[in-house]
Image (cartoon, rainbow, N blue to C red; front, side, top):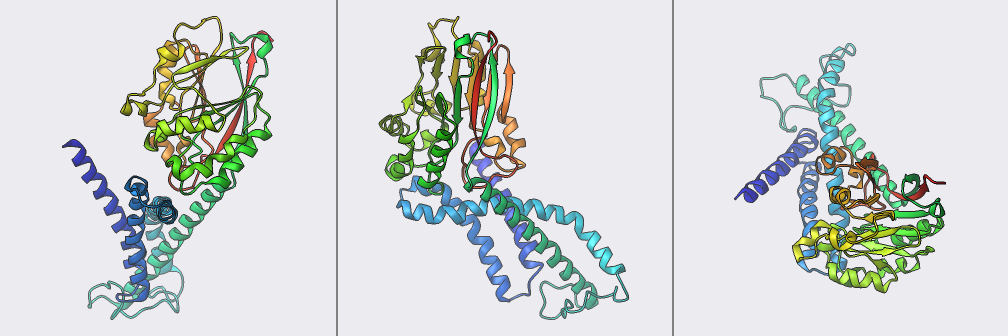
Length: 409
């Protein structure tokens, strides 16, 4: 019952915000019965329909080509919708100032600027007949000015965010001192990459960008910390193929993220190994200088394959440094209990689109960067790709080269 009520509330808010967009961008700026109003109304209706379709397309079992066709406009509308609402809310603050400025501007203060005046009859949702035409035309001018500026700002923001994703992740370098790390491991470099999200939008070309960037850092080890894909092995076999070309002296390791469990986790666990990646599924390996462990994502509990810290970290030599790969930052609390020195995570995307970071903070102990929890350090990468719309605003994508430093060096 609670879930049903929640769904109704969410859909109500979603629908209400779209009505607000229609009112401010279409009804208040166009003439009743005009082509512009029909087109604007069609866009406001089609956008959310395509967005919902993009969310359910994979699970509906429709052909992958059709999923790709729906995904681009659907997810892009999702990002545009967010920034249209935000910029229009800013416009609500500006609107009365613009009206006052027009009223006091010059000798034509009683009417809108030349070329803007529109007769009250036949206009868009005009005021009552006994109201003078000038105030009506002034409101129309202000609505067009504010709505147009908000639309331009939203499109520009989304365009910038899309370019940020499609141009590929940037390399970030970070040195992390570890108290128990032996001197011989000083300077050991781990390329940490998460949340690539290969799927109907980010495909093979993006995977090649990521592989080229990682290999260019010449790491000692590569850690893929979950959410590699959004889709089945059948649909994305070609997209992930470039990962077979990843190169590091101690190999490339992979742990599942929550999205793998939406995409056929068992098949992906098998396939990444066929690509040459080492799977850490509630397990660990002893490297020359430290233990590298990995746990399944929390979402794995759905199929009886949740994280098992005892299997991954139990009965180990506590004198050895332990580095843990765990997709979600919230898993840090278990890591602390098992004496992990460093946990490497992703999942948050750093919020991906501002102000999403404020929502992400509610569910994650760390959104991005390095923090300490007791004797355990947690590093969270913002991820290399993007989920849903290929848009990042205020949370640039990264591949982080973590250089381990020994305090004995």
